[in-house]
Image 1 (cartoon, one colour):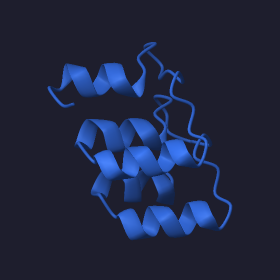
Image 2 (image 1 turned 135 degrees about the vertical axis):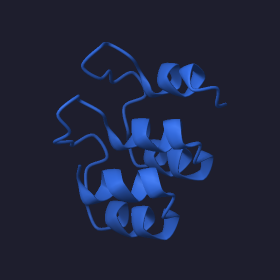
Image 3 (image 1 turned 180 degrees about the horizontal axis):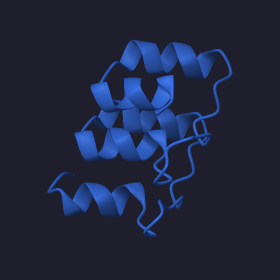
Image 4 (image 1 turned 120 degrees about the vertical axis):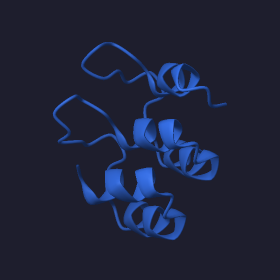
Length: 80
């Protein structure tokens, strides 16, 4: 899990903003299951971070290892 992934999951919006403003790619992930930062923020219910990641170019249609998008994952856990 990258620093951006961890901050997105934990709801650390200021950290996410700092990382993105300093060039971290919101679509770059090293997670074993293909999760992106947007997915971590979505399943944790952090709407502000989701919007921030989208504003910085996060791909809304990216899928994880089982073919699910961030929106599908959030819906599955009962969010949004």
